[in-house]
Length: 340
Image 1 (cartoon, one colour):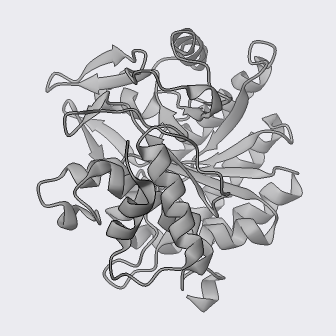
Image 2: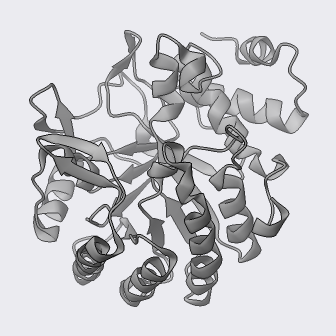
């Protein structure tokens, strides 16, 4: 059994951190080792992508807030494989939360999209094979505007505004379909995804998607994982945040989720997007969450520091990143756009 207090002290070492930070770190170390849930409420909830069954030859037996997809892509052939039940030993998921993606991201890799109806059927079928979670949020089948399938490969490439019209149309239709299936989704939460290339197009998509939202739903902000690679899109992101969050609040939505963004520290002089988004969500009484694979995957690199990880052990890095985001209101970048 891991000594959580000693491990936390070893990770902190000579880093000056608050008691609040240390308490969160001990809580997230318990989650990273599959012991128990962090009893504290984080500033920003992180659903960690844990699609693989093992990391660094260790069983992936984490608990807490996790994110899975009904499909995964394997090998050079980009074979699409239906996700299997996680091999997590005797861990009890009944207290954990699951963000269950639609598979839209994986479907770009194969260049083979399905219909919104097929996507939901795929989600519900594979969910029936998974353990029971305390909460499951099902994501609508949006069309991503920062991923393209070119010559058999997925590339990170932002669409043009003209191309984005199709993405918005399909994304809105996916939210309409999911709204029409609420009888089948009794007991599940719903995340209605949005897309858009520029601020005006994004706002248009949000306004249309909100027509198919209930107050208990979560609005998903898609298309921003590109920020880590292409920081020139940060001004557009700022514009979207300023335009969209007040509209979401006015519609009575209390939860917002941003997909695939775990960038919370300044990078090469660029301010991170998450503290700013958290500030605007807090301003309007909206709970923010995110998801990503990087808290684990960055630690798997041979040069883990170059990848952006703090520690080479994936459990330690996962706990540390979740702790950083749990205390994100302490960030110097937490504030309005004009203060950054």
